[in-house]
Length: 464
Image (cartoon, rainbow, N blue to C red):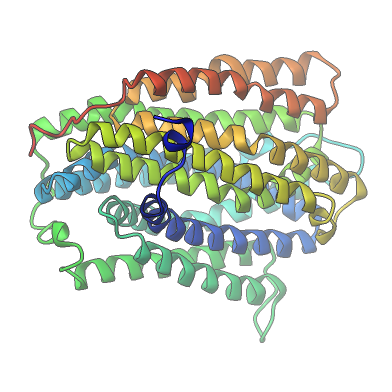
């Protein structure tokens, strides 16, 4: 097979990939775009408010990723069950998601109420001109407490949306996401600034708007799923019992637990990396917040393509089409990397312009611009890593993904950031660049694992 045929697919191939990826891109893109506008609105109020919300969101990010890990552990079974036509298996995978998400919501509320203020304080260190630490802590904790009311609807909507996507129904989660972010945007404008007679609530207003939007998204997804039974037949009778066959629980735990732990440790690792960077002062927190806001908007491309790998390859493996899965995976990884070369170039062009939209100091704007350039440069690397991760995950190789993702972060990335931030005088920009470029090692490992084909297996055949 020629290199061109190996790496580049047919029109039908790209139609299939884009039919799965584009709705996810649109949903996540709109979500992140409104998050961007939300961030700018809070940033217009002041640097302390923006930094406080950024730290609180870093903590909430850990919770969100834990939810993602919980549903993903059962989701690899859901995709393969659907691929082989086993609807009862899909129902049981969904029930597992419900139980695990409920436990995480209760744990998240307990942790944030009991230790939220202390956790936020870990990120706050004085710097030259970036604001007051006490005020930043107050704004961050107020925002975090309000956001607790949105944990349950977020978890429930994610459980439903992931199950719909695993069956190829990507449009409904996209539409629900669009409706939610529009509600969030309108309420942000009203509640942050006090428009149309409403009080100006600042960061608390931003939190209230987000919580309401999550209830809207949850209601749309849940109601649609149960009304349109012909589009989601596997959800018929899903609540007649919440019992799950013990042998299936064992299988999900064995294959899914490494994935759940991986997501938890990875997100906690990201929070620790942010804490290491914060040792260089509040200006760094504000600069990274601006950078991550625009990066998240552009990252939807490789994130959606990675999710597409999980769904499409998982279904092919479940259907027993091993050679087709291998060929399709190679083309999808190549497509993701090439796409992100272009996306990264666009992001680099706007790097000097975006930070000017914030009401903050020149120091923060300059740092943000440099962070955005670095993020643009490493985007193709991130795309390759992400596609490799989802390839391994689609075949149930969750222990290997655990080593590939979390173990690498805790063994390489975190010690590197910790040592450089505390035992060297290295400025934040080269420090950040070195930590990001360390992921090249991960790319080499991912390439070897995917090329060996250890992920090619159908692990739900006996359930069918």
